[in-house]
Length: 432
Image 1: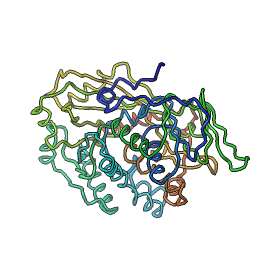
Image 2: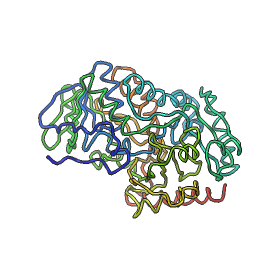
Image 3: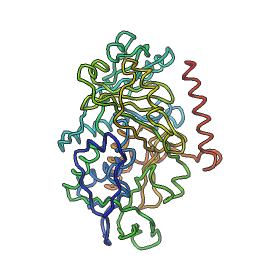
Image 4: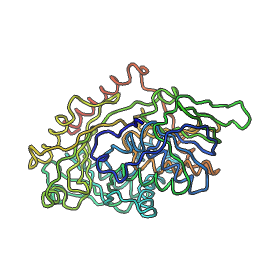
């Protein structure tokens, strides 16, 4: 039986488990059905199973097939647009509501790792690296903002201090968030999936949903979803496919856009070289609009990613695209061999804020983390469970955010967004 493989990534090659889950080949009836076995789906499923619900997860490919199993593995707090932007655009009350949740996702991940003994190479600490004075001043404001919302684990770095953290001459300073960190993202997803299954949950892979009957006017309003070989009828349905939903739900795809990002991992470095690059083992992201991000893996490789391809997909040569960035940051690695190179799509929204809401009384959706999904998805899983248990206040705070389609519709959303990125990229280069 042919099964969909994971993309040829470092993560897939070093996954803790390679067990296939079955295809759905029958008609099931359950309390909750979830479309998508990425972080949003699995986090929600695990929270719901812990609360005693009967849950079925349908995955079109493999657990963690999309962004959840391909990303940079960094636990970055807050959202793609920070709390001050939310305050300014949506008012202080909504800013406070979302700000109070901004550091919860990382704590949920750490709790999951400890509770279920998940081996995913977790290491604490994340650095935001500044190229110029404007970026450093922005980090000072970010520190004050995050401290106002309770993050007391922040350390501002001057030029000498960041040079002691990163063996690169590119940065003039930075901000170290001790409550950040990094993980092997696919192994985290697989570990959480196994925890969900240990509580009686069911996951079906290679079970793409081809039709949804919303049944809004039927008794009980129970949705029904159909795959090629089976179906699930449920009390509640959660749509959690993000950039890999395709056109299954047109009203969701109209207000979002898949975007690609690319990553390489080097050959295994000797321990002294790996330690010399980032002595304390933190992950790093720079402060540019189109940022680079990197870290040392559990087996002493440098994992380096960056760039955005609007509309999704990869450049002609990921290795060529990334090498120039990597060698500019670490010229001491010039010519280093790359063992893996891969790309994947995340889902961008116009506001750069997550889209949570309801299509009907019984159909929920959560998507659009705009490159900031590792921690936010884990928060969202908890909010979905709270809502189905009857406590929707925190979910509804996100659901109240207004979201708009990209200008010009589907035809023009890619070029318009690329023009905007070109503008911000120029600002990065000029330091303004």
